[in-house]
Image: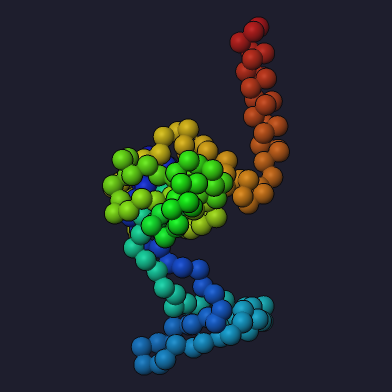
Length: 181
């Protein structure tokens, strides 16, 4: 899969496990329910295998792929879940459509083949295994829109990008010195 950064695609996306945790216990047994993470963490700290099979809900849903990069060890891409605007009030929809909600990025329905009007949810990062993605885009953000989405994610999560900015300024200055001389 190449060139999916900024693409809206359909994918199978599980929800994050949350308490009470439901663990798969085998075909002949009911799931094990654990009320808090303390027992699972204690077992892992004690040297017990810390890999559990969680029973969590999931959906086949459209997502925005944020980057083409994936670590071969994991095989996952990062994406954002979408919000159907039909779930919002009329006034909230207008705020989203005019890009005045920093937590939502409006997806113009004229450009995205989706069953409803949608917005990308800045706070709804998900990791999706490449095998759970239909790589056929139903729409594509342009480079500027993807940059805005990346910027909103950085702001929302309070990511410290100072060293990266400094590195880029130094690279550009070095390039300018090289072309001037």
